[in-house]
Amino acid sequence: MARIMDWESYDACAPAQGIRFSCGPSSFPRGVHILLVLTAILSCQTVTQETLQEHIEDAAITSSVKSRFIADQSLNAVNIETVRNRVYLTGVVPTVEEKQRARELAFKVVGVLTVVNDLEVQEGHSL
Image (cartoon, rainbow, N blue to C red; front, side, top):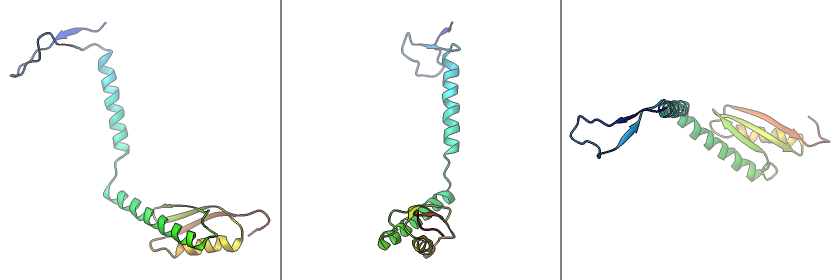
């Protein structure tokens, strides 16, 4: 059973008369668990200036590749993801030539280090 203790204050601002705080075992661990969970979540979400810059560069590369693919019209259904200046292409294209064209267009974007071309050619066409 939780103990109820009277509040004692040694500073000039004592709490209102009759306020009581519970110091029992049921309220203390819950607060500690919440604090530990929040600490763990926040430590995993730390973003450094370097990773922030990487995300910005990756987003710019993805946008540029998408723009080139949309202008090409036959490649506007290709999925594009960029991670650390590496472009990953997924999806389905009608021909082998379009698969190769997608790789070439992605490589023309400034900042691209590697293109991982996982595009599949539609059935009936092979590489």
